[in-house]
Structure formats: C-alpha cells, structure tokens
Image (cartoon, rainbow, N blue to C red; front, side, top):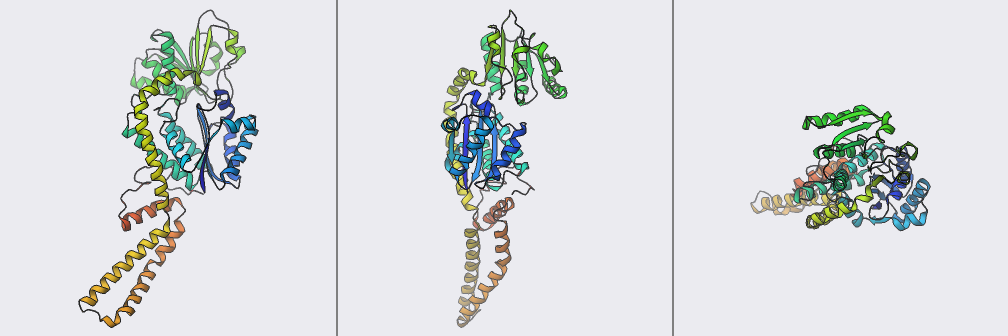
Length: 443
C-alpha cells in the first residue's frame, strides 16, 4: 500500500481552475466523489482537502499510476477541464514525498499565507468528513494524525505562527493599503464561517463599522456576540441575507466568504454608483461575478490570488523561520516511516520470545552453577522451559497478530514496545491526541 497525493494549489493553478475543481465538505458532490474514489480497486482510502487556495487528493493506493489515471478521469468529468491541462497543472507525490508534502501543508508552510492557522482546522474537518463516511482507514489516519503532531511541533519550535496572518487578515491589510485608516469606513461581511469571522474581527480591530449577513442570521449573530464579549463597544450588527442586493449598492467595502457552490452577487444585482467600491471575494468557488467590473470602473474586485503582493512581504519576514520549520518537517517524515516500520508485529514477537528464552536460560544456568539442578538434566529442563514460555506466549501472539492492522493495534504494539523494548517515544496516543482516533473502528 502506497501514499499518493495529487495537488492543485495557488502555486500551479489560477483561481478559475481551483474554482472548477473545488470539492468542499458542504458541496453535495464531495460525498459521492469520495465514495467513488474508494470504490476503485486501486484506491483503498481517500481524503479531499479543499480550501480557497488548494485542492489536495490524499490517497492510500495499491497502484499509484492506475489510481492517478482514475482520479484524473473523474476530475475531467466533474470539472470539464481537459485531461491534458489537468495532468500538466497537477503536482503529484508518492510515499516519502507525499508524506513530506502532507506535513508541509498541515504546518502551513505550503499555504498562500505562510504561517496561517486555518489550515490545521481545515485538514481536521476534511479528515473527519472522510472518516465518518468510511472512506478513510488505518493508513491515512496514521499519516494525518502524525501530520497534526508535526504541525504542533512547528508551531511550538518556531515563531512562524506568531502574530499569525491569514487570508482574511491579508485582505483587511490590502483594504488598509488602499484606503488608509479604516476607522471611518463601513464594511459588509457576507457569510458566517471561519473566514468571515476572522474578517469581522480584523475589521473591528481596525476600528471599522461592520454589518454581517448570512442565510442563517443566528450564525451571524453568534459572531457579533463573540466580538461583543471581547470588545463591548464594537460597532457590529447582524442583518438578514435577503437584503443583500440593497447592501451591496450602499456599502463601499465588502468581504465575502460563503460556502455557496455558485456566485451570490451577480451582474444584474449591481447598480452603477459614482463612488469607489472595493470588494474582496475570499471564497472558492467565487461569490462575486468578475464581469461586474465591466459594468463600472468604480468597482474593484480582489480575489484570493490578488493578495500576493502582501503575501510576498509576509513570506520574506518568515523565511528564516520557514527554514527551521522545513527541517522539522523533514525529520518528522523520516520519523513517520520509522515508526510505521516499528508497528510490524513479527520483530516484536521475536523480541518477546527472545527475552523469555534469555531469562529462562539465565535462571537455568544459575541453578546449575549453584547446584540446585543437576547438570545432566540441563537439556530436559531447557526443553520444558521452552514449552512453558511457548504455552504462556501462545495467546499473546495470536491476539497481537489479530489486532496488528487495526487502529487498536497501534496503541497495543506501542505499549508492548514500551514494556519490552524500553521505547519511551510513544508516537501516536501520547504525543498527539485526536478525538477521531479513539473508540472508533476504521475499515
């Protein structure tokens, strides 16, 4: 079984292509796509990580070439992007490079905004979604749990996430760059997910007045309540989504980050005004029709890919810490494969049997040396002792082999290695605890 990742990101695709490939958890097509992947005989497990700047297909496969062929064909049918373009743009990774890439992504080293903190939660949500569908089993669970552990190590050992930035904070920074002080500005935030939440908080911190709207107004109100708890004097309120067309023609500054599968602000909704408007579309698929800019030269629309000038400044500031972080990722990758090898039960069983034999022979030789046992009986006693520890270890050996390739087996094997091999570096259950690793059966 091999690890395989097919990656489309801000590094190799534009936003239009990522939009066509988007398979977010809320998208009804994602469930069917995942289930189709694991129904293929060459793909045993699959997780799809889909964000505003990447789509990662994280797979456990029996044949990488056949799995890639099937995946690309599915993507062609889903996105209508020609196969040659899908092949040319994709980055693919196998085994060692796949795990290194996964760990880099989880540690936000491959993000558009290096050091951003959203990616870890996004990966956890993608894993949970696949896990609960039964599309993610033992091998990807091991890799993703280890990825979280690596990401935690990067955060704790570097300052890469200190004064953390995100796509949301970068968008607000771009607005400041254009308008200067935001204290006299009024902004509309559309959506109530994490990105919208961050936008609202950054805008409030900049002294901006904020109106937040969402299809479920109670979710927008929750963000307001959360902000009021921290800043009682904040100028923020939640309103109904039904008045969207009114608000976009009254408010000059807009930040949109919904999970809608289609555009929510269309050409026909926009009225021509004689004042400048700056709209930040942080969603993929995009929330705002880009053709709107043709209607009025007073409207500027910024998508995720348009924030790269600020992103480059951020990258320069974090370059030194990124070097340290990549060193951690490299070591974690090697450590992961070493740990996987250690979960092989045969060497452990051999070690336990060897320890039992050594202990028995030591006591036998001691008994003969002290005259407790006659030398003439040595071979017979040795045979009896051998039969005794074989009998004693029989059930342990059978049970250990029966759980070897299950999630429960990882913790059992690690515990036995700790007891019999003095291995104090428990990699899974002690170093990283994940709610989806416990008390569940993985296929």
